Length: 428
Ligand SMILES: Cc1cc2nc3c(=O)[nH]c(=O)nc-3n(C[C@H](O)[C@H](O)[C@H](O)COP(=O)(O)OP(=O)(O)OC[C@H]3O[C@@H](n4cnc5c(N)ncnc54)[C@H](O)[C@@H]3O)c2cc1C
Image (cartoon, rainbow, N blue to C red; front, top):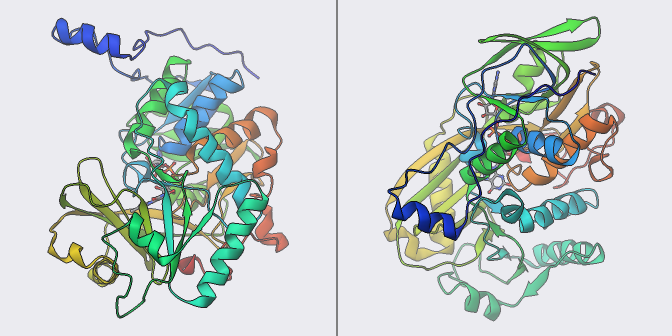
């Protein structure tokens, strides 16, 4: 292992109310960039491919928790323009599988103290995540999920129809398609400003000595037999003891460059934001009859989304049938939304695994670690994903909370099928 060689770099300073006031009085002249724009060096102890949430969080925790700052994060564009900046910002830990609940709960706990640790306002808002149910069978399923969560010490609350109405007056309980029978609330769920997460982790990692190298695309891998010893990039070759892939929707593409075939398909997921209105919705609302979720941003826009489009693509745009499906779910549940204009629509590419659960794992190639397969739920997992991937890289053994997310589980038939839907990525 090579010793850390990163030179100390200028800090962007501590952010505080006092500093805001001071800068306000001197024409904002004292701010410096939040993270250093590093040029790649020929060798690092760890190279992380992908400057999204998971790549940056992994680098941050490697440097701050495991004492490894000889790290580069290589991002092909500017950081934060991948899925970390394209999602609908929901965080929660209301999962079903006993392996998933503790992992996502760990993440939620990390979110709870993150802004103080990073000294960065990520607008963590624990406004509650409310799942609605529409049939008796669904009530049973949700009750089972709530009970499992409570057994593992995680908050979950059943709500009556009247309690749902009191919390979300906008909802049409008696809509003709799927009348609402009740809800299931996780009060600690909520939203986080997505791109601030990338910026906050980048700033923290950079100050801890990590090189954030933007506009540096990885185009291949250097191998010595069955060991990965570095990467080829558009800015030259870089050697590393460990290479970590954290490229979300591009996992299968990058792994193929290293000679690996992953149990992952890439699909597009769309999201939408309406024009801004006064506060009308102060929880994250999920429609149990279809796949639809909505929250209101601090600017007032309703941010909403649905299911993946259902075909394989690397294109960050979607099709009109899914727009129609999401809009139909929106106006069924919240008829008032029909009068709002949609301001923007966009898409992101999701790495859908065969069981809907992620992969945080070593690979058949020595020196190559994988953080991927996040499907469309990886934003909430960023702190835990980063911490457990850093643990795997630093210690060489899986973190106990992520030990089941191995690549080998697919070959061994030990899948973690959160929704019980079988090996069909487009259904998860
Ligand atoms: C519309 C939408 C809504 C979503 N809503 C939610 C939600 O509400 N809650 C939730 O938990 N999750 C949600 N997700 C999922 C979540 O955003 C992703 O699972 C998560 O962000 C993926 O991890 P990441 O942040 O590391 O990925 P990314 O930000 O995509 O990071 C991967 C990075 O790798 C880079 N890269 C790719 N190839 C290369 C290369 N060859 N060389 C260098 N760099 C490369 C990319 O440019 C990208 O920046 C949503 C996703 C979308 C698209």
